[in-house]
Image (cartoon, rainbow, N blue to C red; front, side, top):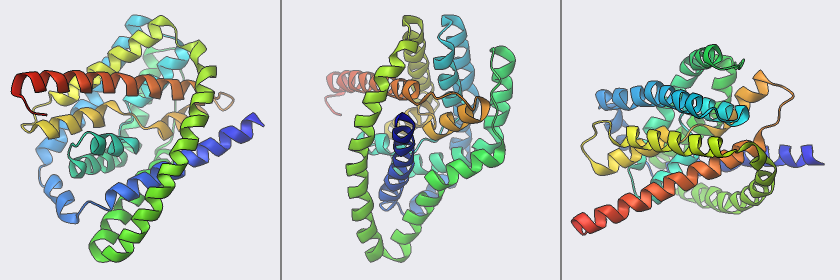
Length: 288
């Protein structure tokens, strides 16, 4: 029974976030995507922060805190695999730049079959782990969840706007309905995963997420909304890739409960910093 529920939640998570990407992509134009691609130095700067600095700093933090090994696995894989579908929702909810976020998500997912295996090999040398995932398995995981619905949403908006509007309403409604089921199921399973989150694990998670946020925010982008977008994108690891890597590396392991707790803590840290910075900006400039 428990396995069936886990499978159902896994399917819902995949379809829910694919629907989310399509819904948000339906408001993005090809021109908007091209305008971001025409700034390769900016993409390169964010990429270096995301695939080099954030994973390295995360590894140092978790080594220092000597966190629980299960939480360490989740954090290390997430740090080396940016481009989560939910990052687009975070960007939209905080009124950052959706075109930049969509471009970064697609770019990170294109990079992941090349960068993630290298990162997993490095991690396994410095931690008592044996993490692995083939480039093909990574590619087949990220494309259906991110790149395909993103490309479909953008091109339908450009070529068939009437069809896009109809599908956007359907996928948007599906997302709102299914995310409630996922959240309820997630919180139920989260109780089981709490046992792995020792004080050291919680502190390591908070420190790593905070470091990623600040590295993403202060990576040299001139516009505040772009900095906020970058911060959110580099601090949100791909949930599907975390599950994939653990499943391939340890076929008998089931870490969905622990991964849900990690995601909840990560979300809380992001929200706390967002509202703190928002209040500081309001007091300093009188604007949001």
